[in-house]
Length: 265
Image (tube, rainbow, N blue to C red):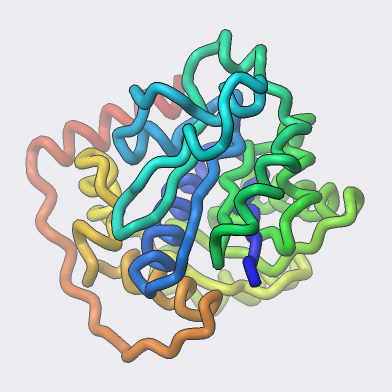
């Protein structure tokens, strides 16, 4: 029986899409028939992260009624099936987010896991993914603004009849995990199902358009994602030791500074 998870966050910039891509890839690596659908039809990023930004048919065309879902389904890393949204504004204007229900009706017949990368924030486009999933997983950073917005998303999910399974805390200082976990569970009122540490390899993998669980499988972030995926899949995994992060070179420093400047703009 298929399990549908919507991956959501209260605000942009939490690393939600990166978590979605890597979690889906890891589930596929575990031998689970998995599909990742980018339901952020306004600010699509799944295709960009995986180098699929130029595919001919996307979820936009499916939601506009000009294509069927099989035409917009592509093979991704480790056998993960990916349904990217388009990046054109015209395609966004023509897409009807209400038709996501119909798309899901087709997908649940074919997969064991369906992950939906939801739009960040509270919007009309984001309500449907929160309502139709079996369970919602919140991706949150250990920052006040991210936590407050995640709480709003949790409340909205409950209002529309959805259920929040728990939260994944992303980009965490590894020395403060216990304190952060207790505070997050107290504020959000949901369990922490995983903690992904700050990992410089995440940026390197993203630049290469390869999921970190494939490019750097023994890195701290990869091992954290593997544990979360194993728990969702009901698979027991042997404990692995994280490899030390690679030393940051000039290109990595330049990319990091560039990203920080863009985030401030």
